[in-house]
Image 1: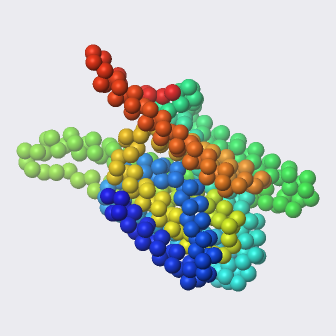
Image 2 (image 1 turned 45 degrees about the vertical axis):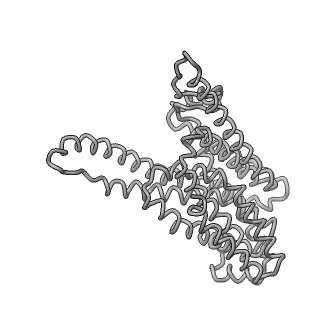
Length: 381
């Protein structure tokens, strides 16, 4: 099972490391290995969240996620994206940006650094909306019940998550503008860009997430009708197909996954410049890491890990919330990638351990003689 799921990741790792050695020797080998570990550590929460969405999709769309999706993730976000942000930020053509990336790496890195505030605002807002919509939803199973119960009640207020996100964005842009003004206005003109980028991230989330949710609901409604009609049509041998609706739902969920992956990859791409400004090594290292994230996503789905360890999804969303705040903070202040990755790993590790403790408690109750097992609808702390 492990070899089947991670086989392509192992193969890409071998090819990537060999390519690194051929490109730049053993130093390049070490850089690619470090970048791969960086990408995996920063994106583990991405895999957990992706798994929660991917398990709703059929085997065909899971294959699409691993094939076309990985091409988008590796070549789109880890190779093309750094070039595009330089091209847009510097007002130059893509070919010139590629030339800079290959022949003037210091200038290329500086242009990417200059574009970081707008990238962080876009990604931070997209991820913040994911987190807010999660914690404001009333769920049967709660991890930190003392916190999630009151937040679920607050979530009944319409558009609360959008309002909070906009307030956070406004505060971030005003802080950035004030700091730029105090330091002579070097980045004052970018405060407006930060605000617009954040709004663009919010709009992207609302459009893609809204379409995904709409077609997912349509699919559930169609499945319910199908179940009812199958009972009536069983005698005549007729079957009701939901392929068309399912295709639309799966397509928009796939699109949502790709935008989600793009938002998660922002910190990895930017953080990679702390290690190297060589776009070839960056693409190799982050690409290898992205393959493992994809394989891990599929592994979690096929193993039913999210069903067995019910708090993992909660921990991943809290990690998303932390990452979104970190991205918004990095608009103005630098935060080491070690902190970014560690927070996510700690939150997911904590949620995993809580899930193990919950499973043990349930097993103990069910195994105790004369005791009736309690419902598992809310095992929150």
